[in-house]
Length: 512
Image (cartoon, rainbow, N blue to C red; front, side):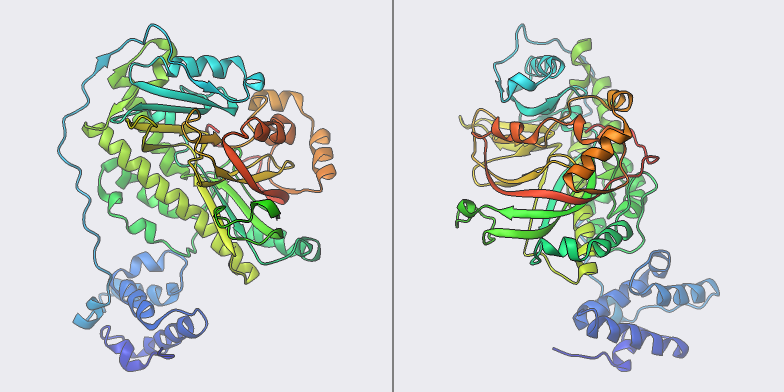
């Protein structure tokens, strides 16, 4: 492998002004020698910067200073065009994603079935009546095929949180996906012992604060991998195009509410370490990083836009109004489907940004990473072979052998699980412990002294957060896990120790 970039290499990109040549050489070789970038990647990065210096000048990245210098020359009327060899270093343009010309969704008024379909309930004894009634309404839709309710369920908009609904394969319900599209869990396990937490608590807390951003004002300049922003789907609809700049600024950030990034200890159970488990970790205890967040303002805007559109196009009885759907064979349905799936890619990239930056701050690489969506819709088959669209709103995919993460609260443990492919649950499990009380009730009934006592007893340091996320607003996670022993096998337990959440003044309208 070549270890240096020469001036001749730099000049193949174009006529770089002589005063800037030392800077180009220094940055290029620094990326190779200290950043472990291969030569081709360095040349591609420099070529991209010369092609669009303004973009690189106004974001914090490896070539910001060079880009600012080139951009200043451009403003003076001095162009630094790429040579033919320089153009050859640019990555191939992605094939444009063309939205087929489809019919519009015709406005229609539709009634419900005379009675609900039967559906499975796990943990019925501690699920509120409001969630059960919402689920009954959902399985009364004429497009519903099957349903299930997870033990963490509580009332939401349309489909209860913790609800799973299979509909006809071409019908998607935006409110049954949820407001925070592709809300996601991600766990990185490091080859570091639990004692690292007691040896370096200040380091772990400092990098957590420095490398995470929360809430509406949470934006990042420095990106690790912004390739998700190059996906052709960003150009498909005006709604998506108008949100792209905001999405770029928020890449690598977290929302408010129950979103978090936290250090803790993962205990891998000895009896879970088999070739079939998929976890690929020896039994023992490890330092780990766990995050929970979604698709930020981008996903929320897609959800709100198409939820309203669905309610305008598909008019249902009042109790079912938020379960309005879009047909995937229509223009509106395809627009939402593309936006939802793009939000899924974006949410995953958000977590990877956070985990990479924190791993880099520790100068470590994770031994393993486990992640999963909830708040999403998947095209799947039921046991009888029927093609359906499975909406999991606050529910974790738990097909046979599928790994996932079910968190507790800021003081309760979370669990790495492997799905058992239970047909009755539509291959699903809970997405967390589930709320016992609303945010308003939490503010009115919990004191800060109670909250602080719970944190102290659990040995948890908290940065940010507010009373609406206090541990006592959640169900007992052990009870919730026990209620779904037929749905998942527990492979490991995560115990939180240093928790970062949005500051109390960072509020966004959201649905858990």
